[in-house]
Length: 156
Picture (cartoon, helix red, strand yellow):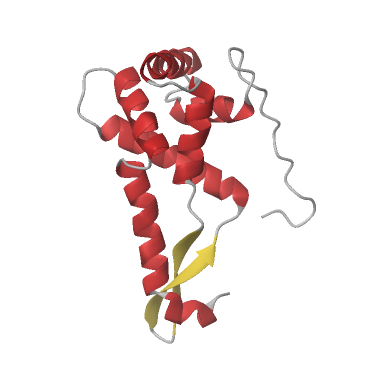
């Protein structure tokens, strides 16, 4: 952290097709090696597949999936008196969004299948329905925080 001044957050422009900032952020998360056009192709292809399979609009389905994945608490390691405790901590809004997008990308790419478009579309549809690996990760994180609630007085 800088001592003199606060870090200025960059403003992310909305994506060209849907005009939504959340989609633009997810495209940036999806991007590897600076290949934004490839990430856009994957995302928009997945949105087309969602449009065919779902009765809602693809943007609503995507937002519902992200909202279902958003974690409320996480555990952080804290060393107290020679032993390490997992301390549950509430998550800021920006980090919640970043974690949910990261989990969606990770578990979509881990799915069996032939193309990333199909895998991403399937993971988004599953997350919107309340199932899938990314929802399981959120529940696992919440269970871990619940189990370690006794150590919350070590919060820093």
